[in-house]
Image (cartoon, rainbow, N blue to C red):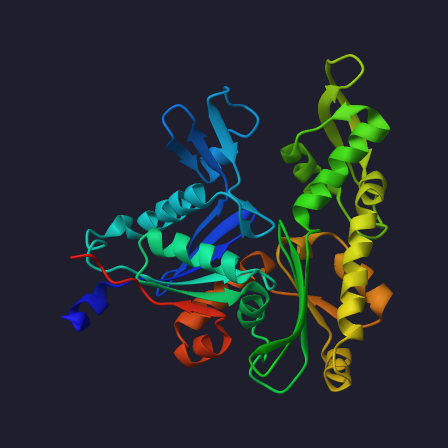
Length: 351
């Protein structure tokens, strides 16, 4: 009977990020890539929308509808909403079959490198309660390295910088383990807040975070550009209270973000300083790998290279490197057992 059910059982990898959630299904690839945003009706406590639909509601809802991100810096801040969001994504995987009540999936999920035991348990419980048969938690840096096809099993030093929305994780990997690590709460969302603050201080303009994110994508950079860029910045004038538009250029956006970017560079230096010298020699030869959405910031790799004088390369499709690594682990049980930090077996079903 167990063999019969195994035919219909889904095996799923979930990159549960602060900004976006990606879902990989074995045999199908990445099938879901949606914002980690949920809209809740506070009168009825019902979930109204999840993902793209909920993100479109940000800043536009009446008082009784709250749009929220249930994760902060990669950690669950609202357990119930996170559980409902996960259940929504798991149910979406099963839209093509009616056997989900018989075949609870096995899920491998990513987590920040420095979470506590309580935070790990919260992630595990949320996944189990969303309908999983069992859950394995893998550090995102490790998953990203595997998804980028770094030789994590070899006795070599592999330095990876995984910059997402809520955290930037720096890790040195060797022999299927992380030897030195650091997670800082300066990443994509913090850069957006830097731009919001800059607009307030310099232009007396109040921006929304979505507008700030668009500016970062359109004209943001970490180094001087050969061709200047500019983009219209629209918000509310803090003096008149009326809508206003000003043009902002790449130099101004860079000025807004540079302090945060330098903190990330200094953190990479700190990790290299405490890494064993044999591994540092490997890193000097092999270079640094950038992954996550932050890797797409113009010139960020060159900024790191100039400061540390080590080659820096960007992962292929850095936005999906974590979830692709989780998907590869679904095909390699031995490696999964080696790298998982918290395997949680399914709870016995009540009779």
